[in-house]
Length: 335
Ligand code: SAM
Ligand code: SF4
Image (cartoon, rainbow, N blue to C red):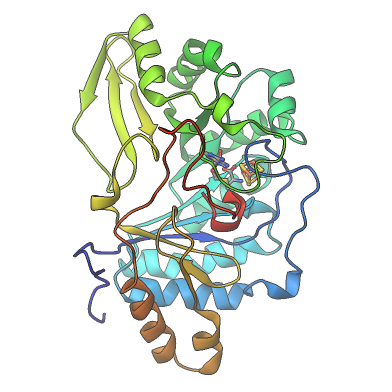
C-alpha cells in the first residue's frame, strides 16, 4: 500500500461513498422533483472504471466502501461490481462493503449482496404507513420494500433503517417505527432534512424537524441514555433503556461534526466531493483515462483532491432560511 490519505487538517480518509447512478425508481419529495433530467448513460463511469476508482482508493487506505445513488440497485449490472469488490474484502484491505438503498430491489438482490461479502445495509424509509409511503416517495410502494426487508433478513444481512425526520409527517410515527425496528432487530437512525437541490414548491424549512426535538419526543416515551461512541461521521447515538435499542441521530445542521470527518464522496461521473456541504469538487476522470493501464496519474489526482478537502460546511438554519444551500441534489452526491 502507498502512503495513507491524510487531508490538510490531519484527518485520515478511510471511508469512500460512491454514487453509482443518479437514477432512481422513487421520487422522494425532499430528494427529487417528479420530472428529473438524468445524465445521459454515456456520462457514467463504466463498471470497470468504478472498479478502478474504488480499487485505487482502497490501495490508498480506504477501508470502508458504501455504494449509494440515486438508487444503486437499479444500475444495470451492479452485482458484477459488488462481486468485483469481494477480492478487496478477501485480501483484508477493505474492511466493509455496504450499500444504502431504498429497498425496492432487495427481494431480487439480497442474497447476491450477502454472497459478495456485504453484511450490513442501510434502508431508507420514513414511514411504515402504506399511504404515506406512496405520498413521500411518489413512486414507491411499501409492500415491495417490506418484501425486500424480509429477503435481506433471510439472507443474513443486518439492517439499519434511515428515516428522514419530517415535521407534520412522521412525528406521530416515532413510537411505531421505533417498535417495529425493535421487533425486527433493526437499528434506526433519524436524519435531519437538508437543504439540497432545487427546493421548488417544497417548503424545506417548514418540514424541518430538529433532531433535538426528536430526542425530546423519545424522552416522552422512553428512558434515554446518551452513548459516547462515534463513527467519524455525523451520527450520534442514544440507547432506549426499555428496549435496549440504539437510536442514531444524523444532525448535519445543528452539530459540528466536521473535525472528525473521515469520508469523501465519488459521483457516478467520477467527480470527487470532499465535503457534502461545499460545492468544491475535482474531476478524477481525465487522470484515470489518461493512463488506461496504470493508476499512477489517478492516484496523484486523488491525493491532490484530498489536499483540498475543506475544514467544514456552511449549512445553517438558524437564520430561518436554508442558508448554505447547495444547488446539487442528494441523488447526485449520494447522501
Ligand atoms: N436511494 C437510496 C436511498 O434512498 O437510500 C440511496 C440514495 S439517497 C440520496 C441517500 C439518503 O439520502 C436517503 O436516506 C435519503 O433519505 C437521504 N436524503 C435525500 N434527500 C435528503 C435531504 N434533502 N435531506 C436529508 N436526507 C436526504
Ligand atoms: Fe431515490 Fe433515495 Fe432520493 Fe428517494 S432518497 S428519490 S429513494 S435516491
